[in-house]
Image (cartoon, rainbow, N blue to C red):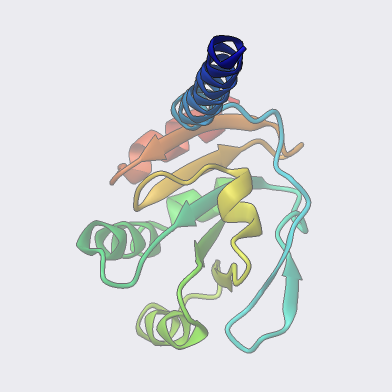
Length: 166
């Protein structure tokens, strides 16, 4: 009788361990094999805490997730802000999940009317896009369909080439 109980408990433990391994591997696979059909409809906050819907544009959309202490992110901001050609084709959003004070500091250093800096306090869009590194650049067509994702620094020319060829 005890042998049957030990076998049943062992089988239950083995089943639980296999289930947990399957769940972990599934989540890892989803992170590595990112797929999104279109830009989700999210309302984020501007640095003055006013809500802003990121889909309020008829142009293509460039979403850049950044961190204020990331030098590659700062280089991405500088490169995009120095290149007026991108703004003819796309609306650029720089988004962070860091505290709003960091966003205000970055925005004050790189103020441009064409770039919109936003705060993702609850990390809703961050999670929907499966952000893996910084900077993360996501390109969407004017109809909000997903075009391409870049992790790490990417040149403005590369961004524009994908937006124009949508």
